[in-house]
Each structure stands twice: as C-alpha cells, then as structure tokens.
Image 1 (tube, rainbow, N blue to C red):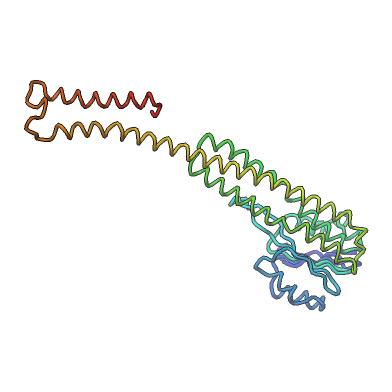
Image 2: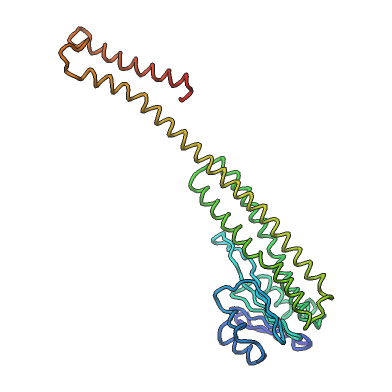
Length: 316
C-alpha cells in the first residue's frame, strides 16, 4: 500500500488505496465536495452540504451504503484565550472513511501525517475496517480535550486568587471569559455520548459493531469523564461569580454607609448654622461678646455629639 504524498498547501489528502481509503478534506468547498460526489456517487447531496458552514448539531444518520456522523470538538484559541466549537464530519463506508473539517486541527494533522509520511505508524496498514479507523480519529480528538480541561482548571485557580486580592472590573471580565469557555466546552461535548450510541445501534447493517463496541465504549467513557470535570468547573465558576457579587455588594454597602454617616454628620451642622442665620428679633447669642465663637462651638459640639453617637452604634 503506498500512500499518496501531498503538498501541505493542498486541502485534500487521500491515504491508502487498498482495503481502506481515508480521504481527509480540510476546509471543504463546493469543488472538493463535487470531487467526493464523483468518486462516491451514492453520497447524498444533503449530507455533503452539511459539511459547509454553518455548524451542524451532533448527529448520526444511517444511509444505504454509509454512515454520516457529525461531531463537535472544542479547540482553544491561544490569542483570544477562548474555547470555540470545531466541527468534524465523518462519512464511514465499507471500504472508505471521509473526514471533513474547516481549517487545521492538530490531532487530525498528526494522524494524516503518519499515514502520508510514516506508513509503519498508520492504522491503515493494519486494518480493513474503516469504522476502526474512524474510532482512531474520534478517540484522538476526544483525548485532545484533556489539556483544555487542565487549562480551564488553572484559570479557575488563578481567578480565585485574584478575586480576593484585587476585586474589580478586570476580575469581572475574567469570570465572564472563563464562564463562557466552560459553557462552550460543555455544549460542544454534550452530544457525543448519544451520537456514538446511535452509531453502535444503526451501524450493525454495515459493520461488525460488537468487535468494536469496547473501543467506542472507551471513547464514551472519556466523554463522560470530560463532562464530569466540566460540571465541577461550572459549579466552581458559579460559586466564584456569586462570591464576586457578594464582595461587590459588601463594598457598595460599606461605601453607602460611609456616605450616609457623613451626610448625617453634616446635616445637623447645616441646620444649626441655618438657624443662627435667621434674622429673628430676639435671636440668642447674637450681638453678645464672642457670639461667633459661641455659635461655632455649638456647631462643632453638635458634630462631635453626632460622631460619638455613630461610634456607639458602630455605624462608623
């Protein structure tokens, strides 16, 4: 079996022309889908069109000569520090596997490189079952999610430290970013278990499912493990968000209490000054020696009394 070597710039790679052929379509276009249609005329147009944007939901459709499966996987954008969904489409026939995805994915690139450059490491050399090859791709993509779990967990630890050290607008943005990543990650992985289960049920007419059930059950176990981690992370980020709101509310209440106490202190002083400012005919202290210092003493005496009152009530 001699895999065809392709230029890295090409978006079409065909590995193996023996018992099993794997065609990997990177960034599918109408032209590349037409080539698939020419090679495999039985592929339905509705399935081929699902390879084009926008994203599809995870699903498994059993056709007469092949299975069409759509799965979403998370990818981490290092520049934006954001997790985004990544769609991979599978056409699984009796002697072929077609994978289609928008852009480059490191895991798929490594698998295709092994099959194109290192024949001894390629699964095509040891299998005549494309469903086994599809498992290898799905398993690799699923396992690639675990480093992202570690990234999310580290973000949560960093966020927890910042929350009590420097609460403010930057922490709010970080909470929203991590929360969005967790929700996107969970949404991406939620359809895997049911889709693979449908694969094991509906694929019996084309493949020996029982021979591969243990392999696919292992993938489903990985998916459930990832979902368990994400559920814990969701609970953690929700708790951190609630703690942040409590801290903000506490700081706001403290500031309002300080402003209220200040107003409560100033108002009596203003009232006393306003009373002495009235030009009543028999205003006490007015016109007497040291009347200014008497009125000033009354105003500041009132202020001291109010401050002592607030201190006794522990409002200051």
